[in-house]
Amino acid sequence: MRKNFVLGLCALALSIWATACASETNTNTSSNTMTTSSTTTATTATAPRTAPDNSEIVVTNNNGTRTETRTFKSGRVERVVMTTTPEGRRTARVYARDTGEARDLPENKVADALDATGDALASAAGWTADKTVEGAKAVKEGGETVVDKTAEGAKTVGEKTAEGAKKIGEKTAEGAKKTGRAVKKAVTP
Image (cartoon, rainbow, N blue to C red; front, side, top):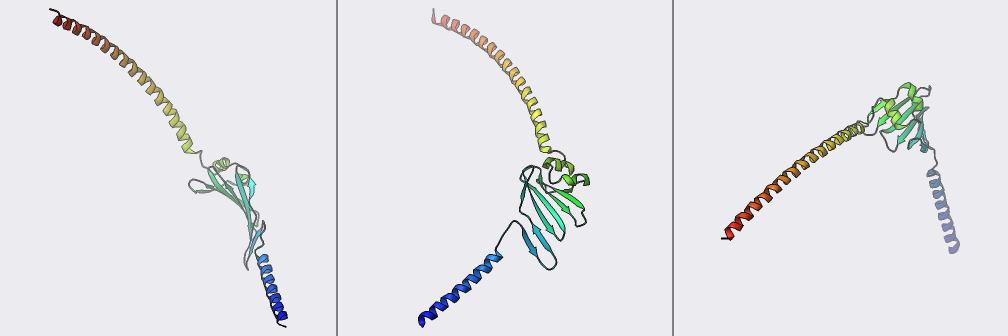
């Protein structure tokens, strides 16, 4: 009798444990699509997909509004967010990587927001080419001029120094001859 009681108790504990594990597995199931629902909003998001120019696109839907966010891994543009309203109106906003500034793309460029390069999107948003690169080119060109002028100056200084050293050498040799004669006269009676 005691044996049956213990066996029944073990079976009961095992069934409770199995039920708890099954409900936990159902709540933790994951997939590429994530859905969050409440009484007023429904949001779905897809897993990132690879896009051109070293970027990824994530699509979310929230109450009929579709938002496509393209994130760049490098370059002047950090991300582009394209929004399509339930009525079908599309807008795109570009975010700069270095400043975080956001600008809307012109309507004629919105269709290209998910395919164009980051530089093309930055230009379409009205950002000029990277001023640092332009400045570096100007400094390089100016630096080459400075190097050329410095080399010319060094050559001139080198020539003058050689001329001066030659004159000093001649004067020193002439002085040494005179000194040698004076010493010779002083030593010989």
